[in-house]
Amino acid sequence: MKISEDKTVSVTYNLTVDTEDGGLELMERATEERPLTFIFGYGMMLEAFERNLEGLAVGDRFSFTLEPEEAYGVYFPENVAELQKKMFEIDGKFDGERVKEGETLPMMDAQGRRMMGSVIEIKQDVVVMDFNHPLAGETLHFDGQVTEVHPVTQEELAEIQKGGSCSCGCGCEKSKCGDDCSDKCK
Image 1: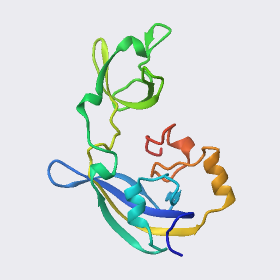
Image 2 (image 1 turned 30 degrees about the vertical axis):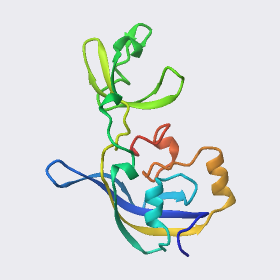
Image 3 (image 1 turned 45 degrees about the vertical axis):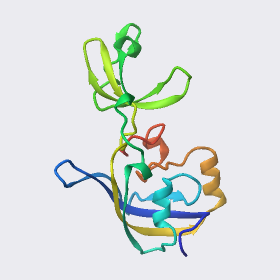
Image 4 (image 1 turned 180 degrees about the vertical axis):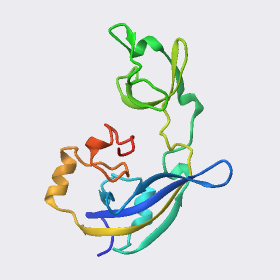
């Protein structure tokens, strides 16, 4: 059976990105024990990712590169903001438990839209947050193998409808990835 619309697909892969010195850095790995599983054609994955898998079958290997414009977009420096530290207070005290450098936090803009921001620095009076996707501006290199392809089941469709399926690429359940699947599996 080949990968096409309305098929449940499982893959293993290594995702690497370019480094400044010309090498590659491993960003994510989907293993046989924790494969990435998704329903093809439902918008769960990047369009270019799916396009590169279409027509493959179980056992087929793949290796492809996605430029930033095909993946998570270019990096916009203007998406880095300094927010007043008092925005992160609970009962008048700064929430140093959750607000740490490297943490990704759910935030809301002035229009009430949810977004995720990464804490990049904590200063005296401000917290510097980056609202770009963590992989914005990165060229993504995928090397892997198709491990399963089958027609989508009613149970799998029901899981998507109730919001319990994770499409982040970490191969785990949403409850272990964070609200928007931006965190790596623990």
